[in-house]
Length: 185
Image (cartoon, rainbow, N blue to C red; front, side, top):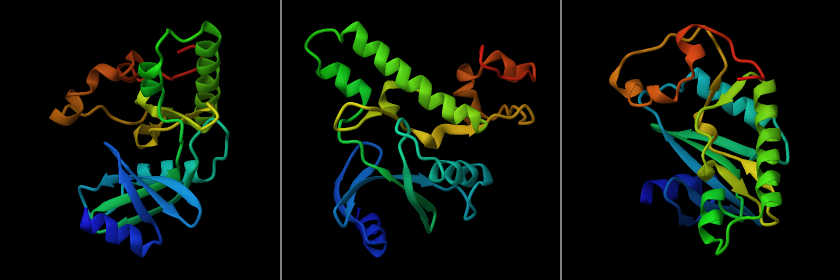
């Protein structure tokens, strides 16, 4: 915690609290969510920088805006807007009754709009879960969890190492047949 706090302080952020996979920090009057990506090597993966460049240049009401990123030793920090409404999983758990059909349809439509923006740039979100669907203080859906998007490419070989074999069940059949993705899939 001390190293993280001093790193954030050097970049002008004041640590407010930690969450299960990020920290909430302020800089001036703005509040940010800062995620850490631990790097296995001293160099940054080109796919990661490609994703970050795309997301820093994308401004859309249904995607979480990335504001800054920086590296300190073997940790890469990604600074994004803080969505005060929490995530969709927590919102559903907090509801005493089932959500109204119109509310669920609205959430789905907003998620689809965010995915369309990402797909138009050639990226795929590989971990679309209710925890990665964030809500603003007004209830607007913002898609997050961008440490898990990857370029849509048929040239990427499938590795059989133990790390990937743990998540192999998330891959679509097109990956194995070197097929392409389109709007129907």
